[in-house]
Image 1 (cartoon, rainbow, N blue to C red):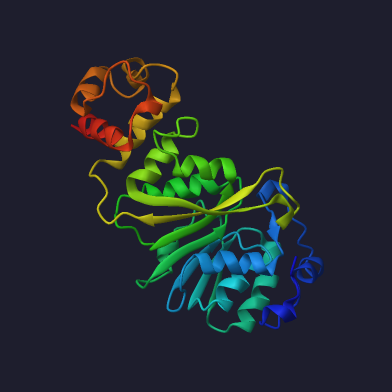
Image 2: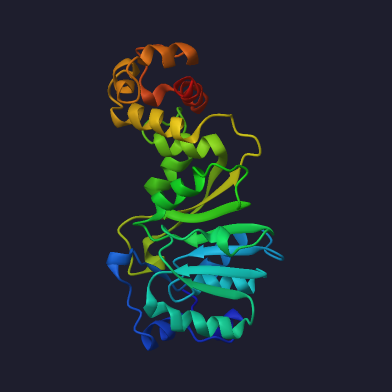
Length: 285
């Protein structure tokens, strides 16, 4: 793995040295798995597309491997949201190397709204998300009422099994679920490439994947809350027929099913995204 700061072209110390010097051993409780391979962090940054003039929001930068790659690839500004105070001095060194281009926010990303500071220009989210908060963060970004969203694209790392759920539709019944419906409704999602466990310190027990999500300009119209309610009920009891499982969302599921043209004997994994949207519309009245 390449991890020589001199080879990176930014003149900063190798990441392993940064981690040692600042006592940044990864914490399992924070879902931390650091990437030291500069070739890999560069590939992730480039996969987000041209970054000139772009503000990038990064979640959980840790010692800053991906942060450095984003800045090297030309991001006009990186807003790095980090809850681990141990990482702040390391990130401050990067900020000093790239004056005016790195803003570090000490905050829990689940409770911080980046819209407060990103401005009105082109914004992309690029992150090696901590495993323990990846899905809640993604769901939050997808279910904000305003659409199109404040971000132009999201390029994110997840466990491979989560990535497969993000891109799944009714043709992939083993992985299709609430997450696939929400992602398919408002975005076009694709898996770009996998990352082997050995690329991380410490190595996780699973393969990871880089997923890219681009917002649909005009997704099918429905209430976010109604769609969440319908998918929660349907997939919460996915082995049951919808005429039974949807009782968790409405006293009379037949109304929703009839409005969407879905047989009462269907099960959740058989229904395409558009069917769930139709049921959500019926639920909202």
